[in-house]
Amino acid sequence: MGWRGKQKNYCWPGVYHITINVAERRQQPLGVIAGDVSKPDGDPQAPHVVLSEVGQMVEEELTHSISTHYPMVEVQDYVIMPDHLHFLLVVRRRIVSSSGKETHLGQVIAGFKKGCNRRYWEITGKQPPMEGQGKPAPAGTAAATPAGKAAATPAGTAAATPAGVPLPVVSPQGQIQGQIQGQKVPSTATTGRPPLFAYGYVDVMPLQEGQLERQRQYIRNNPRYRLLRMKTPNGSHITRGGMDTAVSIAALKGYLRREGCEPFLNDATWTALTNRLLMNGTTITCDSYGNRQLIIAGRQQANGNHHLMSGTLLPVVCHRKDAALFSQQKERCLRAAAAGAVLVSAQIATQERDIIRTAIDGGFPVVIVIDNGLPPIYHPSEERTDLCSANKLLLVTPWKYVYRRADEQITTVECKTMNCVVQALCRRKDSWWKESLQR
Image (cartoon, rainbow, N blue to C red; front, side):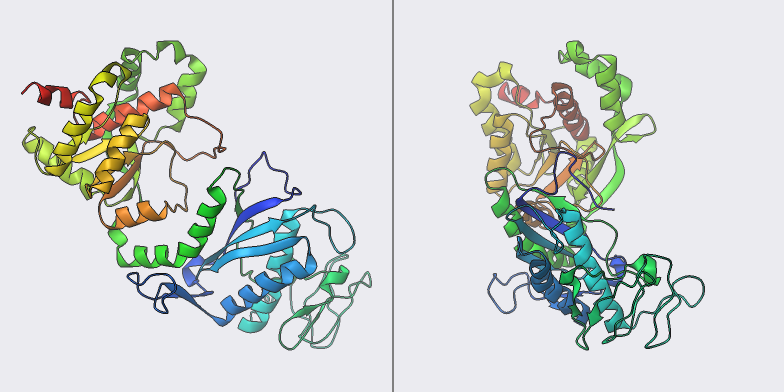
């Protein structure tokens, strides 16, 4: 099932980043990843996908059929991966079908998938079930189907439905003819054959400055990301739960009250907050992306010795009351990182982002607590992927994933909750750097 933005009108002109998954992702029917992650883009040995016959067919349908049937729609940047594909779909004006009827993006994608299905069945020789509905009709004859339903026919032939509407003719090369005149390609429901693609699609509509270029880069770098994850599996996967903070709901509520959140803690806010948190019994737990050894090693060090030493986890939380001391806080954090400590932060305040950015640029490992959960399919930015693979970054979240618009902001209570989680992961208060200044 794909995800939809409820605020979108899918008849609107615009740019859409579309992701479509194959029905059986474990089979990876579209191709294989090849190349060398050390080679730059443009090099013949750079990471790329060697497309299978099915993958080549999908590429042809993607780059030719959509714009043929819908001239107002253009496919730009795209990548066909072994088990899914990404592409930018540019809708230049309102979408109108060949019959002149106004339609929407979902119909464009559905037509593309149906065309791919027909050619996929021909390439693979997929047959419908031999029992029940969808039984194949003898070659050269019309198939008996329920009223208004289309039936599959052999390549190069045409058939008629009970209503007398001709089906599209398929050439020996598998190219669908006549669909532009409004004829229909049969769906999996009418043939009983397994589909190539999963139901629905995922879309992202870049709206803010810079988002479109990031989407283009993401599409181009997909083969590199995949190869990198294959080569370094420990640093490039999601781990669900298992990272206990030892913070109970009662303890969190007490912390939020001490932090001045009492005015925001009405029943509705508190219920919404607790419903979003990941729980392991009575305590908050976390999902993560990357190698958890950064946390595990740091906790082992903390349990043995609370002095600052290699692997120690240190919370980075910048308070307004300490603004005048920021230079000392930053210096102390970076000195600890240089000595081998791992900085942990939710990066809420600008000063926190400054410290973590400087630590990353210095090659020091960090843990970042992120403000949303990890969806089933999660791909961080290229930089974060590289850092996770190099064991320089661990992404942690105490939240369940929810769809969030680009303009939605996290609440004060959510910010304070993440700061609580930061300190709980470190098993240390965020004032540690002040104590070190007094030594």
